[in-house]
Image (cartoon, rainbow, N blue to C red; front, side, top):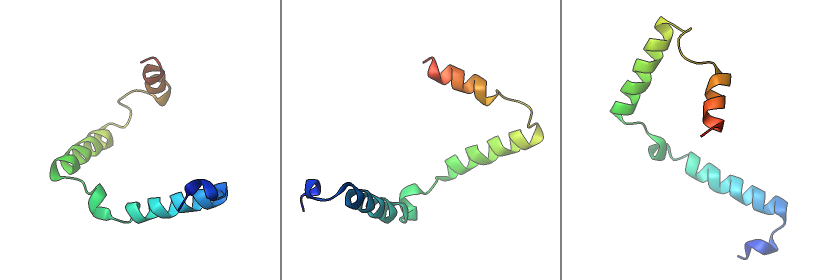
Length: 66
């Protein structure tokens, strides 16, 4: 198959089908126990005091100035 012979719409549909075939494989995106623990710890910390941390504007500013 020559991808250049496909229309842009056909290529987009093909890309979507390819992505869907990968995204449906839950094993590719499984979290380790350590990752789950980090997420749970962070969620508990946030739940205990949701006003801590930086605003999105502050974070975005730091990221854009890297």
